[in-house]
Length: 405
Image 1 (cartoon, one colour):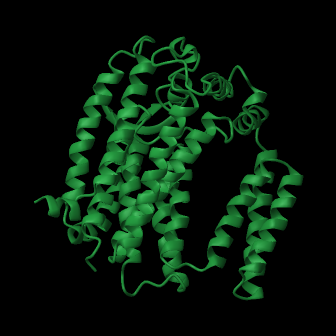
Image 2 (cartoon, helix red, strand yellow):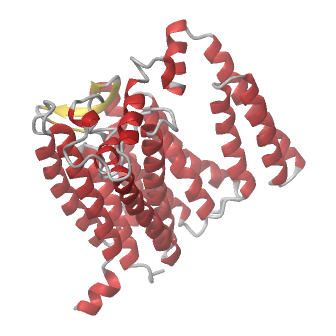
Image 3 (tube, rainbow, N blue to C red):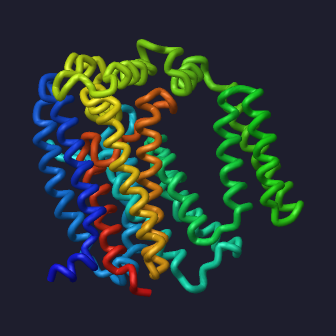
């Protein structure tokens, strides 16, 4: 029995997940016990229990059956995302929640799981080839469809997560460097257009060089560059026609210091909290920024400031090490899996965790714009916690079945 568990039970993913959930529970308790967020910690404990059960179910679910139900589940998920746009509950300006009484959920969190599995199932077909333009467009469309519905809520942060997951999966599935470069160039062009003409021009030069170096032929490179230029110019044109107050919102989104008492307040206070922690921190439940509630609802998107302030550089490093271990293990599972479906899905899961971690910690430290992305396993929230633990369960499943074709 011991040898069987050693061979097929993914202890590493299981323990790393539990460690991150424990960090989350400690952080949520510290951030909420004395600031009027009654019941938040107790709810998170219940959700962690539900997540643990869901993780074990995902780990034991037959992989062939999982592959067969991937597309039906994906279609149902798209339907739910449509329904939430009509009857959903609006929270923080985003109509992305179902709420009945005291219970609620965010379908977009579970849409990540469904989309990963559907994309992996499509790429695992023996007839699928990303060198075929039709197949490439279908693969991109599988991810873009939920992105459009989520952006309509609007939820920019989750939309970014979906796109960031697409690139590593396409790379892992064999997409050419030119295709990846064309996608990245278009996105960089759109983002750079918001930072001014000089940044946009520099980005165009970099994008052009990238497309030229990875080109399959000159015509394809020219078309890709033209699309990159058109996308960037369209962003500038749209921005210039927005009302002044909407332009101000975008400016604050890109630079919190422009509105330190409004849109940029949380990011600035989070930087103060993390910076004040020093090397060893101020001690558990002793953080001044945390306990005096300088950061509103710090138990959600800015939860990283809690271990950063109370346990300092050492505590923050431990959190980062746990995430790094999980990400490296996810890549290892993808590499070891002989099943194409499992391998692609493992990379998708790893990509989701990576982009969440990078953006959340980046915005908490003032390195990236604030777009409302929670820290996996750590931030308060039932839907995200359960969905993330299900994805760890999938990694455990793929590890157990890594030798199956």
